[in-house]
Image 1: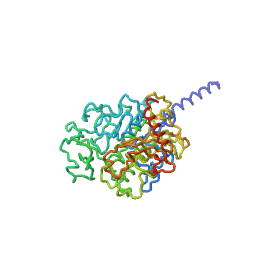
Image 2: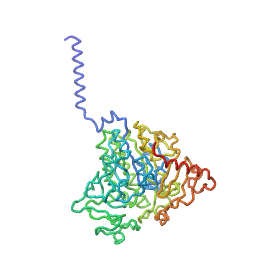
Image 3: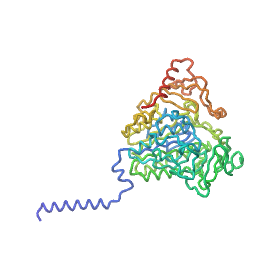
Image 4: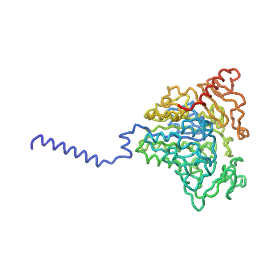
Length: 521
């Protein structure tokens, strides 16, 4: 056989052998993803409820250990001056998902049967991500309302609008909060495990059904409760509002940690070969605090401290799952909280008595509901090995800026009326050397405050909610006179400079009004 023909035959046989080897090769899980990473990162937002600046060992806590979250901070960027948009949950969640200050729509803490706070026609972060090829999911606490508000929610039928109408492909929800009825899970548009022969009804104005209540049957309670939280008893805990029927659909609070974590892990597994967005919204450490038995006694701070340990465990489970699937390197993880810490908030769980030397809000004054810094200054950690170098950032950053920053990351242009309060601070999100925001509004249920770099201005107001007046452990931080603090020299907001600096007050009030009057980007 001529040498050319022999060489040709040799190369043909080699090529066939390589093809056969490729055909026989069994790929390891998601090897195709590892070999050809999509340029768009997966995005996971861990959103804890009522976690204060000082509640993590990564932020100086010694009475509780949070190793999984600490690892995110150690290998990522830990912020010291990052803020939720508001000092309460519903407004913060609204702003996170819309890039718009909640005061523009009058958004406040919602009842458990409230209508959707986000209009289905509105631009949202999950919609933005869907347009960029992402699969999107929300798992956990919702508290942004459901239904169109044209009538009472019928919990026995498909409930719409909801998360699926504002950009989420999948949702598994605690519909409002753990302390409000209905105490059931909602998967996509339907209540989970609901028996049609035992329909579910909810009322927030009068008692319905024959279920025991906290005010009628206090002997049945596992935790005492105030007058707001003393209605229908579910799982030994009285809630806000009355619930009738739906017995088969009731949740068990102590099962939150596995049920929600497993739903998140399943979503990640199902979408491991595509870019995905997971908004994982914890119920912990909101009241009622009922961590699973495996976490009880993990701290000396009782249920609240043990619930923080449960948060850390859940975080670790999801991060480990990302790592096992080979996805962690290309996943942008944001870990934060919806507002500052509160110790006692409706239930007798000994959080105040057992806090010891622990400082839930670190060095800051106030907490949840408060106009002082601890109302909105929260833990904020960015973990993204592919882009973010470990470090500590002192830049002023707002959760409201995640929308525009992620749009920039994806090179996606925003409309002039979209996310009008969100600024692009992608550089700040990824680097400890970036300066961050100049100004940022902080919302409370009573008034607005303005951060202008190290200056903090709190508007004067006569508006104080009765529950804050009655709860001496909640420092609202509001007054009938304006307040001005220099946070460079007065981190505890103890020295009001307003009487001495009227020009500075006028300047900051003017800036705040200019932001309020804004209607487009």
